[in-house]
Length: 271
Image (tube, rainbow, N blue to C red; front, side, top):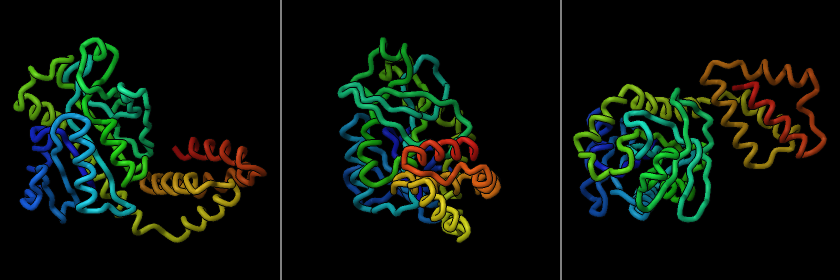
């Protein structure tokens, strides 16, 4: 299941139409749309950090996500060049200086960029890069329900720092222009979840062995599992990579520090 959050209805419209999502009339605080067959729940939060955090909490409390579910935040933002689409790899909260890094294990073929979340978009900040009103709040609220590697942030530049001049129709056009890039992301996320449920036992055997030999923490083991799943989906022969590293005596480590270093090397070879 993909839990989607957009700030505006005009950002959500292409997904509602594509997947024939139905409105959940039981929810009186936010606009919520869903279709179980499509494995999508979508909530329109309204602009701003408080609204975004409240929407994520509301949706995930009403419908608690499971281990294999995703949080996908998309919509428009301010930036130097209108019309461009980005996968956000770094989220910066301007008010606190905090920085968050979604674990971008699954690539979408999009250019990547950092994005700064502000309470009020300023043109001088936009000249430096992407700026929005919600991303950091979505991440922080989402972290109570999802792992970092199960959250994805994709933004389309709609203006250069004056969102008041962008109409709902213009936003819909920007979203529509990237329909062929956005819709496959949802398909990919649900495909990953389906594949994980069919995960062969041999992969778990590799995980158990590697976890011990690399002195993995729980977080490292979870990350290892995700990388091996990605390799399987991407058609990469992970077993051959692992065997080669074992033959080169690179995976039987004497300490956690060495294990972390070898784990990074393993990830590089898999990707």
